[in-house]
Length: 422
Image 1: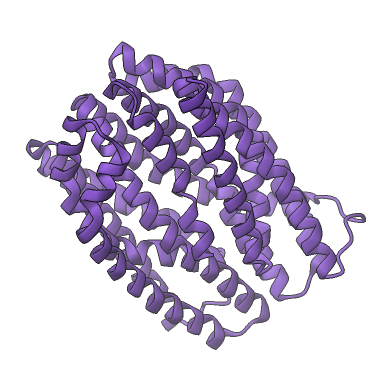
Image 2: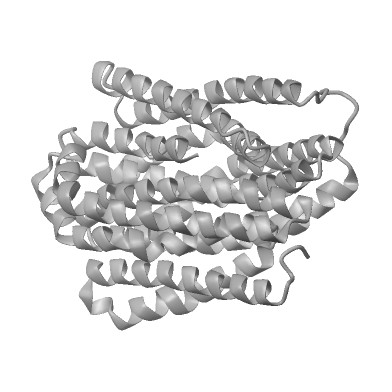
């Protein structure tokens, strides 16, 4: 899980590095706005992966493979509906992005070019989320690793060919990601077929039932709201950064890759926690469930401290690798200290997200996110607006800390009440 998730940010890192070495900052700012907007939408759809992992992990723990197939088909059906809706609304979404960002015409031209192409990969990207959730829920850790590694290799190769060799610019980076997503979908189907065969599960004989779809809709509703609130925070980060100028927007795009690297590494542990906690709940084993929570916190702390040290030593070097634009490098180094301390601040929120996914307690996740956004992000930002971009990163740090604290508090309360299996 950790290896596969660490490799995920390579998509953003390569896009940023390739575009960051073109002639002007507006290319980097444009792809930051376009790819950031796509990331927001696809992350918003992460409820598909999260809900699939939780419910399938519990069904897998109970050895109910008929329900596993029903839940898979139900999740794929929901992913198709959501992806078609995104494509249909893409012109409206692009107009909204332009209105909110206030970016220059040059930046918006590049952002629109990227967004209009990249959105066409929604059916593949969202289906991949569901299939990834299935593999995680069934404890098939190598599957996601193969899938993400393959996607990254295809994307990196096509990025170099389309942007640096054929000079397609930002559009080339978008097409590289689209082709990578659809290629990954073919591989994901093959991996799931192999996984089912290993457990003696046939493809036929099951259809998505109304009950499974209704149950997923209820669970997805709360996770969707939680994801919407999370993306509201990151959207604000991107759009307010755009109002501070294209140099700040480009610098934040570089620095957000640091946060992406941290999030996906810690999510590697969180994904394992989802599968293990969900299976333990399906088996009705409270002691085993609590053990996996403690193990996850232990390893999460080790990796978070490691990232703090790594960024402190190599942060400036990484910035230099991602862009050679002097003004962007100078701005990114100015705000780098926030990224050095952020891993340890954010550790608990990532790990306990995984715990609550495994417990399929989406309501608690939703409530925690609401408190973190309103109290942990907007209040600190309002109080430090005069700090400019420093205030923005301070608010992000407070947001991460509040998410973690509220989830830890809620887990302890559920554990003390003996209600983990409910």
